[in-house]
Image (cartoon, rainbow, N blue to C red):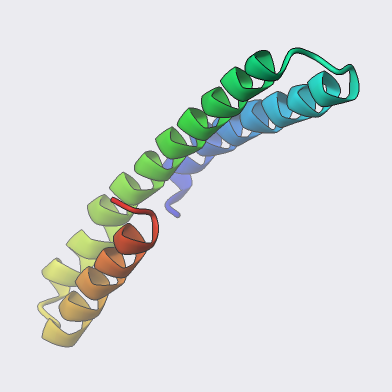
Length: 91
């Protein structure tokens, strides 16, 4: 990951880490199930946002770099890699 995206990504991940710790507290405190599920959905949405940001950075830097290089094999490899990860994430 390029350095210019790293601080924002780490900030988001630290926030998510706090949300997960909050979820653990909610479970420990026997909070109402629907409240827990609602918070789980919020964590999942936050993770999806981080995933999108990382994928955007990948396209903006890694894939564009492969295109600029003119190396056809590298271009195909980067695009295949992207499709593989997208299929794994259900996108």
